[in-house]
Image 1 (tube, helix red, strand yellow):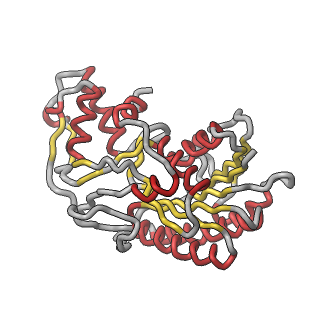
Image 2: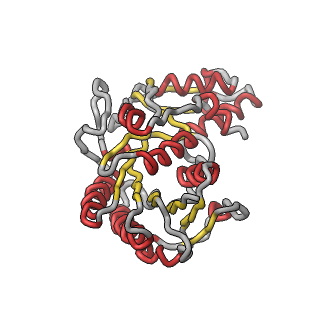
Amino acid sequence: MKIAVVTGAFGFAGANLVEELLACGYKVYAVGRKKASVHNDRFKEQKNLVRVFYEMEEYDRLFEAISQEDKPDVFFHLAWGGGRDDFEAQHKNIDGALKALDAAFCMNENIRFVGIGSQAEYGVVTDEKEITEECALNPFSAYGACKTAAYYLLRKKAEILGVDFIWGRIFSLIGKYEPSGRMLPDLVMKLADYQKEPYIKESQQICLSSCEQYWDYLDATDAARAIIALGEKGKPSQVYNIANGDYRPLKEFVLDAAKLVGTDASYIKFGDRVNPFVSLRPSVSKIKNDTGWEPVVSFSESIKEYSN
């Protein structure tokens, strides 16, 4: 039986990854924070799952949680915290990532380490340009800058240790375990409410930006499968975009969501262009070619997940 370690295991992307790893026959060490959270109750009764709780500052001791009989094959590092421009919190994430790599090496010198980054590393990319892994990194937030720094430092440290290191950059995920407060689930919830109460005052309209920017939505289940594919087949020292590749103007996704919910799109008011104008047209050719992974969950299936 293959063994995996997952940090950030009880969050949005992490919980989906844990579920898919278990479905694929892995034994999973799921790492969460000690701080009380309703998310920490996930997976309490799962077979082949060991739940452990460490703060990021303690990640260099993670190897202590591994049974002496177990030798993990792959370490997935998803844990990350703090507001996008909380410089102190973002900087701590870099140190936590490096400690996670140290712990992984202590668990198994031949372990594969998959770190998860973000499209925020690319910064603002012109609408005319598809985002490939070779694009220059130009983050404009502390979050993006620290993800970028973690990538470079992890890659170098893994090279020194002789550990196979793979980095995946997630774009926009939707689906199961997605928290409230994000645009799409909140939009769907409001549209569903409007369907039940059709007499909505103009002041209660859903106000969005112009939604002119290109966007790419990937179901979190597909993202989990992509991350597993990187752990099993990704090439060492390589970076991979984790996205759908079916990018469209964001306005089209919004209108499709309204149609799927069965609500009149007149409840939605489109406003001004956002600034900075982040437009996402990610290429997924590399991950497909190197691992054989393909997204299979449709946008409509993801939207249905919000009503479950």
